[in-house]
Length: 336
Image (cartoon, rainbow, N blue to C red; front, side, top):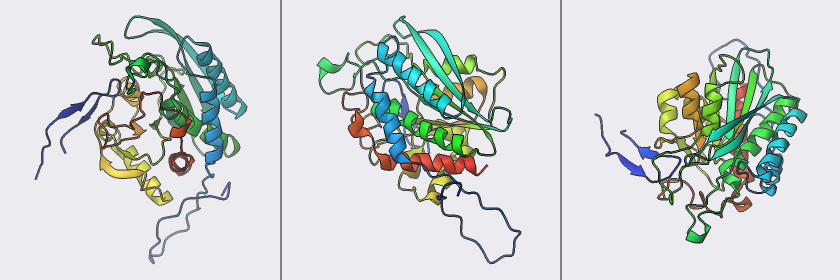
């Protein structure tokens, strides 16, 4: 029997959200239960332990620069920090700079930061997030704040903090695959609610990279995008486009979360589709990429009530949530 649910839209600016029809270090996630059936010995994979304190510091450091809005000194300083830190952690880093046009025809100086580990290995996995912060608090309850930039502690910095800690672990304990970590710029400079022009303007950095990859004909086995993955008690549903374009990757990640004991964060239900960086990766590079992104069915936006407000500050960053996401991703990439 097929049950159809009516299509309806959430007004959420950039992330058009709609519902559609129905040990290297002494930690490793628990292994699947063994049966009594004789089998050949399989070498146990030991997964590094994700350090949430480290991820938290990486996040706080980004926020301390100020709002990471392109064309500002804070943005430039934070970009230099991120690129320098990834180099220090042992990655080969490319800073891909470009002049991009916003929804209102402003020119912004954007920079995608691309960090590669085991560059000679053709068996690659792409991990990514956006590092810029929104120039408008257009969801803030106070209209006077709508044109003010946000800290973007959860929406941007937290995901980058998780990836920096993952990079630290990779630098110390190399997996048997190549890893590319891309921090996309200019994801969050889209059409605000107070200035509708019919041009979205979201995901500019990932669109540029996907059309001009840092390596000719770049590809990867799959990609994992992190977005808003640090809020207290956040939950992650199976995003619609991820299920359409990369269902096997979704299955891999959600099963890893269950093995690691984080099924209370990774919910075994599908949510709506979200316009995010992973769509650019699939559209232009044909890499199956999923979006691990917070979903809250109790809000009108589908995200936390602090989303695109001045309240997206360090109070919205949870070490426990970052641990759940970071450890799950580490489990996936070390079990290839």
